Length: 314
Image 1 (cartoon, rainbow, N blue to C red):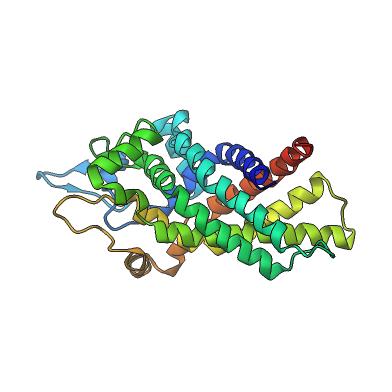
Image 2 (cartoon, rainbow, N blue to C red):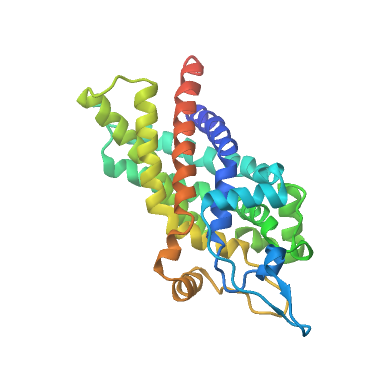
């Protein structure tokens, strides 16, 4: 039964991750807007740069834009294929992170469910989500770092791009050029975010689904699964977005030999972000986050329910 939970969760997670990857990429690009050490505007948008009489170049900071504009720019400047930049890392991440968290949550759910009432208290669901999410994130962090970098690469000037060929190439080059520890850069943030997401997403899905069925609002079917999934996705997005912004920036930062890194850690990144961009910067990319988290959670749980039906006899 334990192995079955890992397989079911892994299949559902990979399907959900691949189908919503373009929305995740847009979210990452938006979360990186406004960084004080980000590439100059002329590198990203040559049409905005103009030569003066001297050799210097004067540019104004690019305005912050919404998800639709970010998506359109990616299509115009990088092509349709760019929307799936880093998809190999997404597959590996879901295989490692989500398979682990979904399987562990399923095991804990079975162990902690009251055998008489067949119910599991909300507090236990949240605790199971925290434990499963933290362990899953620690396992999948290298793929998470690779995914963020591959998604963000297109916003850099051509000369500064990392140009990873695949997630394997990304992980190999990071280990060689920056050390093995770079694969766990931002791991504390990844773990914290994963704990929040898993606890809020899985626990709220189970709780909302049980409430709908108990109240007789809907029967156990696609409508109930979609409703509970979307509500769980919204809860997860609200809870995790600030940590997600900091995680993205720490993982994406470029550390050059002999120079101090842009951020010394998560707290330093958070303080610098809030100081230079305001508190609401922690909710940058929230629209694409909820736009991605909603469909991702719906696809995840609807697929999971169908996979469970197919594998019920195994």
